[in-house]
Image 1 (cartoon, rainbow, N blue to C red):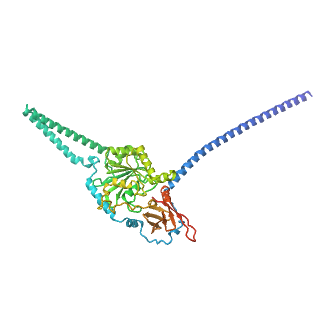
Image 2 (cartoon, rainbow, N blue to C red; image 1 turned 30 degrees about the horizontal axis):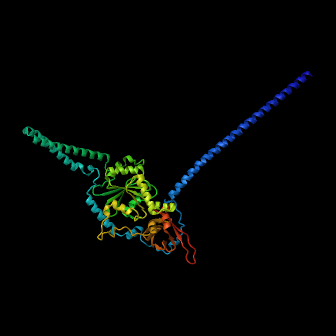
Image 3 (cartoon, rainbow, N blue to C red; image 1 turned 60 degrees about the horizontal axis):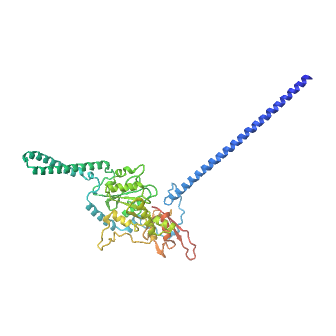
Length: 506
């Protein structure tokens, strides 16, 4: 019995110990589970915070990309590898006979042939008056080693003879100091002239070494060369086309686009006077074209004139370039493009008049960029603002007095049209056709065929086939957005059609 009682007590103690162990394990498991839940919550909170932060950055990135895309799409063209068949509404072309000339032939006929002939004549006269080379280019390139070297040799020979005569006559003259002093003065003058000639030759040789003639300028003597310098998107190529009077589709048209189209120096000559050439330069201050070596590397000292172009404020690089050209006596002008867009924006956003906006832009350029005479131009309408004066400054020979005291008819600028007509000059497309507007005439190209249409002007509006119209406000808006919307009108018994939407090609 005693042994049975002892065994029963031992079993009870073991059962109690087992229960204690079970309770301890349960508590440990609960504690571990609690830590796991807490860690899970911490991870979830951290992940949520990270997602929120990344979401904010992603939202900023998406917003920036959307703004950039919208800006590019204002003037960019879309090219498809597999274009679908056009679904454009062509009802506005109904009744047109697509049997007209090509756009090139049409533009030549519209422009006439006399203009280029007179231009060649005027340029030939200016080249003759200027001489074979510009006066400001490094003299060694102009022939120093041939002509000036002969002069230098004559000075050296004369100096050697004077020294010999001085030595031989000094013994004979003796006390005749007056004659001796005269000979000494002549000798010193010759020595000074020789030293000056040597210094000039050294300077010109250094200039030739530091500013070598560029390899692309193969024909310098007897040619006129004008450089156009500016960053991407400021309108250099379009300015070159306007200065030469070239229209879209003509031979020699400089490519125009929203992307950087100038990665090397490109030459564009006048059609009927190949000796007069405009050069399209890449912008200065980039990795490929650093400002410090730009004038030397690009050969700007060898040009007759340089045009520095911007569409906003001039950069520090462009101002430094202007100062360096001035130091080398290279003629240059400063041009501010896209004035028409600024005029439109200020009129719509701030209610400012054209003269007020022009005054503000002029003051800003003069005060902040220290440019005394900037040329404010609109390349959509070259008859306005400073473009006529710019043309006369860059090519003075074109400002020829006619027999009657004014400009010759062949050289007069285009007849001044309304603001609406001026705003829509150039090439447009609706995705199906290409419309080239020249004054009041429009050339329509579609699937290799051509037709012509005359625009109508009535009630302050410009009309397309008497069914669609645009106002001055719509035309001005098209300059800023590169999208022209023709509003439809309803005829008796008919419902108004859809608006026509043209987008700027150039």
